[in-house]
Amino acid sequence: MTTDSFVPLNMDRRIAVCVRPGDQTWQDAPQAPVRRWPLEREAPESGQVTSLVEYLPNARFPEHQHPAGEEIHVLAGVFSDESGDYPPGSYLRSPAGSRHSPFSREGCVIFVKLNQFAAGDTREVRLRPSHQTWEKRADGAVICVLHRFAEEETVLYSCAAGQAVDLPAGPGELLVLAGSLQSADGDLPALSWLRRPDLAGHGLASREGTVLLVKSNSTAGAG
Image 1 (tube, helix red, strand yellow):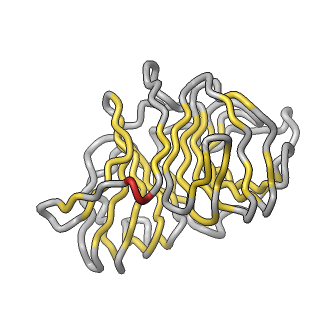
Image 2 (cartoon, one colour):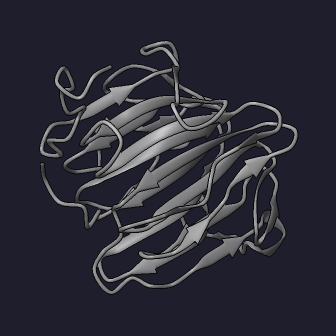
Image 3 (cartoon, helix red, strand yellow):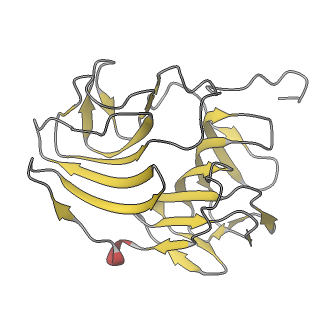
């Protein structure tokens, strides 16, 4: 896709968006043997981006800087950079101005958000599953808080089959990591992505045991 023909993708965050596996095709990245599945994108190779990214075996990116931060959740395989190796379930945050040279020996799939850190959010996070703490709520859901800053919260949310999903009011998004989710938009299988101006309600329920990555009260603002 050329710069002249580029149209921003899903950048008006006042509009609800639901993307399921198969709704789009993987796209080759220009910098490395990597494929991308964009969910929202502000510009061809810059600006705010949310996407699924697949590193093919032995893929490497050259060293690069994150102008306004990078957030990663490892979905499959092992993601690596100078700070170590990160298995499935790992959560990483690299603040504005940080640099790294990511790679994957065996290949991996990650969920990535670029250039969406709030001003003043300078915390670096390297959180493997073995260091994540889960807590059971009164409604039966099990929650793991990955990051909080100002009005933004990123959590893992696990619930049993048939259980209603009670998410906070306000703007946010979720990615189905395992199982499937019932919603007003129909069933959402694993790797479905849902973004809404208000996450609360909408008849969300777990069709089977479901694990979600949930970001609420996003600081990114409306497009």
